[in-house]
Structure formats: C-alpha cells, structure tokens
Image 1 (cartoon, rainbow, N blue to C red):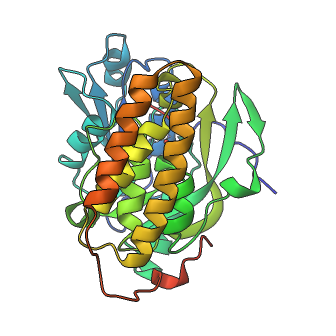
Image 2 (image 1 turned 30 degrees about the vertical axis):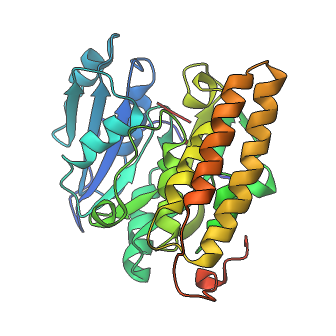
Length: 317
C-alpha cells in the first residue's frame, strides 16, 4: 500500500542535530517561484540532520531568488547562474559546489518524504552502493495516479531494460561523491533525456541499488516540464545511444543491445517525422544512425556476457 502524503515540514521547528556523513541535496530550478519552496522544505525537513541544500537558479526571471532569500536556515545555499544553460548545466554547476560525502538530486517540482535521506543513506552504507534509487508516488494535476507495473523501479544491473525506457527518476537518487568523477557529469548538449544518458553510462559499470519504499512524491502534468516542452524525445535518446557506441567499456553484449534499441527508436522517430512531412529531418537522422552503426568498432572481450545476468530483468521531468 502506498503511504499517505505528509504535510510539509515546519521550517520554524528545531532542525535535527547533525549526525553521520554530510549529504548534499541538489535542486536545479528556473522560474519556479511558486513551487521551489515545496521542494526546499521537504529537503530541509529530512530526519537526517547533517544535510546541506544547494539550489542552483538557472537565471530565473520570476521571484525565485526572492522566495529563497526569505528562508532563514544556514543549511540552504543558493547559486545563481546569470545565463540560462538548461537543467544539465544547472546540475553540473551544483555538483561542482556541493560539499557532502553523498549527493542526492531533487527536482524543484518534487518532494521528499521526511525519512528519505536517512533510509537511503543507511542502505548505501550497509551495501557499499555507489548509486541507489527509491520508489516514488506519482501525482498528476494534483491527483495521485497509479504507475504501470513497467514503471516500478528495478534493482541491480538492468541496462537492457533501461535502453527501452528511463527507469531511474532523478529525485529518487543518491550517489557517493566520487560517482560523477568516475561516470562523468550530465551531458549539457542534451536539452532533455540527459538523465536517460547518465543512467545508461552508470549501468555500464555499476548496479543501481533500490530502497524498495515510496520515499519521493513526483509531480507531473504541467506545461513547463521538459517532457512537455520537448516533443519527439526519442531524438535525444538516439543521440545518447550513439554516444554509448563509442565508449571503450561496452562489451559485444552491450553493443548488440544498443544497436537493436537504436534501430527500433530510429524507426519510431523517422515514422513520426514522415507523418509530419519532415522528410529532411528523417533523412538526417537515418544518415546519422547509419554512420554511427558503420563506425562502431570491436568492443570488449569476445563472448562477454551481460553484467549481473541482465536480461532486461526526469526543471522537472
């Protein structure tokens, strides 16, 4: 059964006493003056007391900065970008500034339940995980909706399944500080699906641990979300998969999975272009994919098997 949604924490109440490693909550935002405090309040209201909240304002033109300036809590830091660069640039700016041994992402339209950080941190430390996620509650238009079975968060190595659809939500994740130094930062050339790209790069090397509890509330159904602003998002997924083909660590199994899904998504995208009389765009993407498939060289040891037995097993999204 899904938990009841809690009331927002009272920021005037005494903060928990710092204990355990410092966790950095990273919130990118742009023009979300009416929403960002809900996310900030949920982060500051965590039961894990040793926490900093870093908000990166991506050159907002509304009252976002004024709203944040009214928060009297030394754990909150606000970083202002003078030029908008998108969600990846905002997150990367924050990642360069965080101080914690662990980093947890939170989109500015989402909410953490109070014990999210404490439970996930304990899970990470007990299992030696580099990255993990939790289950999430879905809200759309102010109403709770039931995700399909296919959207339930998986555990471990699920590279093949993650190619087909994004199975990790940013607001549910936590990482060790060294994670991004190893895997790389968000791709700032991707205006959307930047998380899809990061999770695939992650799953080439590491399993994604799962705290199988509903500890995040994900809000959707608004016109300012990336999933609404950028239509035809398979184009960005195609670009992400082309990038994977050039990575030294892919095995023959990885490449086979990538090529199959790349071809499938290309067919879907090209059919959509032709339906809208965008033949030039269809031809451009077909040529791009053909070049990528033709250029992909040998990768990994012959006969490599899927890591961990993988068989197929979202500013705002």
